[in-house]
Amino acid sequence: MPKDDFSTPKSGAKKQRGAGSDKFGEFTEIFARGMGTPAFLVGMTIVCGFWLIFNSLVPEDAQFDPERLGFPLLTLALSLQASYAAPLLLLAQNRQDDRDRVQIEQDRVRAERNLSDTEYLAREVTALRMAMRDIATKDWMRAELKSLLEEVDQQHDREHDDRA
Image 1 (tube, rainbow, N blue to C red):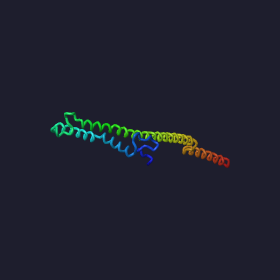
Image 2: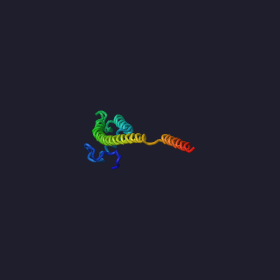
Image 3: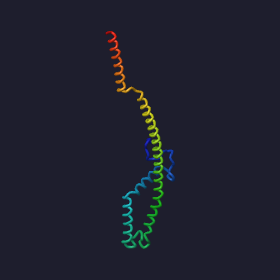
Image 4: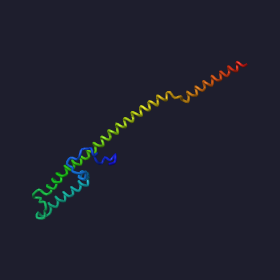
């Protein structure tokens, strides 16, 4: 598994509760993603609308879900869908929580490493600044050379005066 792949939990992370395999977990996430789309909601609305209209307008002997009984098959179908959807959504959420925990832990480790690196660099900059105080600058070197040149000129003038 690549180092920064957050799509699945680390092997040390808690196993899925109730999900027997990773394929089932992937299925739950696909299912959850699908149920959360506008296309799914529009599709369900169209199916339910067609169901209700068909069973309300056709003669009673042609209805597959009688209106006079309150559409029991539609109620059963929607209840069955809800009874499977809720646990599958919870399984998908558990997988996402596991991934989030792994990512949070990796972010925490990365933040600690960044803080450590920043503190190290701050110490290094401080050490460099302190070391720069001991280094001769160009202006200091010019002043020293000028001072030495003046001393040499004065000594040369004294020697010249002593000879004369």
